[in-house]
Image 1 (cartoon, rainbow, N blue to C red):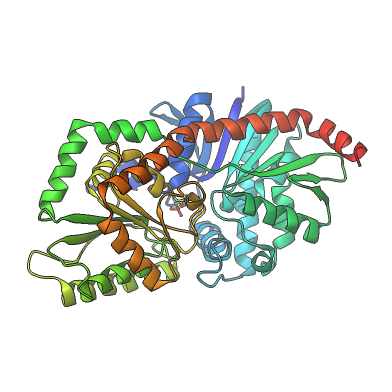
Image 2 (cartoon, rainbow, N blue to C red; image 1 turned 30 degrees about the vertical axis):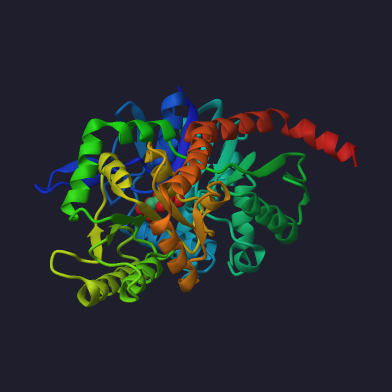
Length: 476
Ligand code: G6P
C-alpha cells in the first residue's frame, strides 16, 4: 500500500552522522527547507524521500519522531557530481545572481540526470494511486517530468526554495531547456516571489515555445501548468512559545552577561554561504568602530556561521576570507575581554537560536540574493516584547513582507553603515512600531498558511487544470 503524500527533497530532515565515540546517530539537517516541510509532513502523515548525508549504504526506511523517512543513498561520485557539482557548483550560483561564477561540466549534468531519475523511481514506488507528490528545490528539477512519465495518475507539485533567475542569466545554462521541461512535469510550480514565477513563464514561452497566459502554461497535450508565488514562512507560534520559555529567557540573559553586558548586541546567523553577505556586514560594523561611531565597550557583533558544503571550493575560500577579516577587525579594534566580533563556526539547536534572538538588539541579515531568509522571520517571531531592530537586505525574499525593517543594499557600504547606526540608535517607540507591524505579518503568514495554500492550489489545479484550459482557450 502506498502513501497519499510523498515529499521528495534532496535532504532528509535528519543526517546520518558519527558522534564523538564513532557511533552513528541521526542529527537534524541544516537549512530552511527542513524546518518548513516538517509541519506539513506531520499534518498529512506523509513519507519523505531524501539523502541522509554521507555515503552510508542500504539504509532502511525508518520513523523518527513520528516522521516516516526513506533514505536514498548516494555514492561518493554522486555526492561530488550531483550535490557538490551540478547542484551547488552550477545551479546555486547561477540562481543567486551569479554572485559566484557557475561552472558548467557535462559529467556533472549526467550525474544530475541519473540522481533525479533515482528519486523519481523511488517516489513512483511509494505513491498510492492518485497520490500527491511534492518535489522540492533546485537539486531535483527533473523529477516532476520523470515522475509523470512513470505515473500519470499522480498530482505533482514542485516548489523552488531559492530564487529563479531572470532569462538573461538562466540562458547561460547549456541544459536550460531540459530543466524547464523537467519542471513542466508538475501541475503546480511554486516560487518564493512573483518575479521568479514571471521569469519562469517568460523562459518557457521563449525557450520551449509553449503558449502562456499570466500564470498558466498551456501544453500541447491539453494539460496546464500553473506557476505562482507562495512565500515560505516559519512556525511563528512555535518560535514565540520557545522565546517565552523561562529557560530560554534565562539563557538569553546568560548570553548578554557572557558578552560583558554591552549596551547593544548585533547578531548575524547564517549558513556559511557566499550569498549571505557576511563579509560585507562585518566590514561595515568594523568601519563603524574604526570611525568612532560605535565602541567595543558599547557594542559587540555576534556572528554565527553554520558550516556548509565544506568541500566546495567557493565555500572553503569564503571561510578563509571571513576568518581573516574577523581576525583583522578583532586584532585592530578589540580590547582585552572586548572583541569587536564574537565569531562562532558551528550550528545550534532551536533553543539556543531562540536565546540568541532574544539577546540581540539588532539582527543583521544582508544577503546579496536570498530566496526568502527564514532567520529574519525567526528573529521577528522571537521578539515577544515588540523590541529589537531588523536590518534586512532588499535582495532577500523576506524584504517583500518585512517592510518595516531597515532595508539595505548590501553592495552599498555607506548605506549599510548608516542603517546599522540608525537601528542601533533607534528610540524604543520607533522600534516597537516597526516590530509590531512585522510580527503581525509573520503571525498571519506562517508556514502552515504557506503549505495549506500550496496544497489547496495543487489539488485544485490537478482536478480542474484541463477544464480551465478549455475555458481559457474558448475565451480567446
Ligand atoms: C537551502 C536550500 C536547501 C538546502 C539547505 C542546506 O535552504 O534551499 O535545499 O537543503 O540550503 O544546504 P545543504 O547543501 O546542506 O543541503
